Amino acid sequence: MMTILVVGAPAAEASRYAQAHPSVEVLAASGNDEALEKLARNRRIDAVLLLPGSEAGELAAELAEEDPSAPPLFAPASVGAIPGVRALAAEDPERLLELVVQALDSA
Image (cartoon, rainbow, N blue to C red; front, side, top):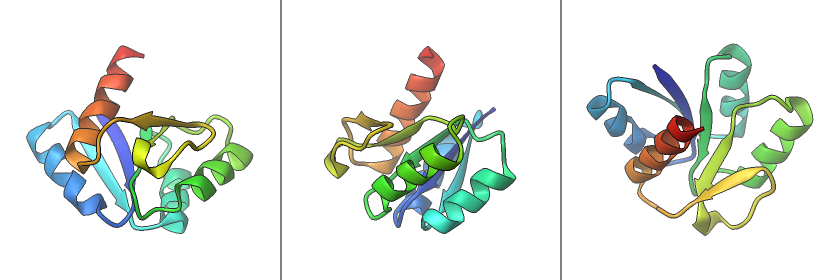
């Protein structure tokens, strides 16, 4: 089982991906505070996907400062370059999740 935390307004759309892929659990957070809370309570999160509408740069910086061993961070390339965040060439939440799963599988 792979667990991915999706942060941002369209996070609910990503849950459709999990329905089609039973080996992936998708947790949703609407903003940074909720994401930090879920990361603190759930150490089995394998990756974090930062969607447009999230404060991706702020969350990435805060995680780097508070928890250097935090799971890898991913975001669509359209949010711009953010230190410590891997850019993905997609916009659709389901496709972004697919790319995150591929990246984790190949690691």
